[in-house]
Length: 335
Ligand SMILES: [Zn+2]
Ligand SMILES: [Zn+2]
Image (tube, rainbow, N blue to C red):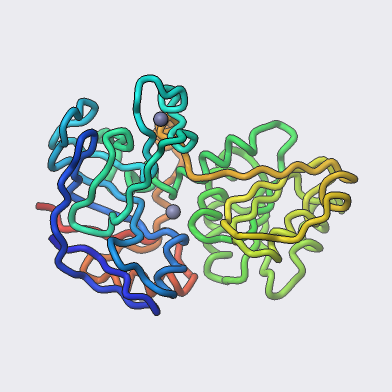
């Protein structure tokens, strides 16, 4: 079969790779679509990957099932959560569908390939009314991260949300939160992504290269600051801006991965009663709710700006890395 290889320094190649063999509790998926994620860009631009690839949002048809697999069957069309819990009946987290909190969770990658391996526990069946592209989004980071984050942003006192960083994750939150009735202030440096955020429902867009986002957010909120700020850029400067732009007793939520940032307990937290939370990936138990949102009319598909055939993966990665796209998908030939 053909699989993507990340050579590093912005180069990808399609190479021959052995077909995956599912072990106990695992299945092989014949891929129909895989999505690109911002978290792949570090390795794409940098050192690349020796083995496998960074794809972790995929959907397709179950082609082989390993020993003891009972939840899905060969021929089922499924989306796949890259993080799967252990699935043992005695695991409290897995029983509750809290896959990312399972102490024995496993990560499945290499989904930019004609076939990939998945855990039975990570397979989320796609009903017929869900198209392939939507399926890849509602069973992966595309809607999964914005949905999981929305649970942290719940509450009637959160009416205005400032979203810092409009990659696919930030854009997903713009779409979902605007649809839920929040007033969204979207902040980025890319004119294309600011325009996308406007189309997805942001009430106000702020070009951080042209104006100070903290001042712009204060000006738009009677000097108070936003009720919540979402850090989806993953850089220290925007993290600090989130704390400056949030109102007293407001909430800062972290989506963007980064190692460290300097904050002041007194100025940023204590004396303003500010809370900060992290939000990672999504949990398989949240899938029914994500499916319901789609069926209730959440226009999930509007997050997708580009679909490339797998053979044109280099072009897909180049477009995505240029920072002017929404979600970018790879399409595999149906066989
Ligand atoms: Zn991701
Ligand atoms: Zn478990």
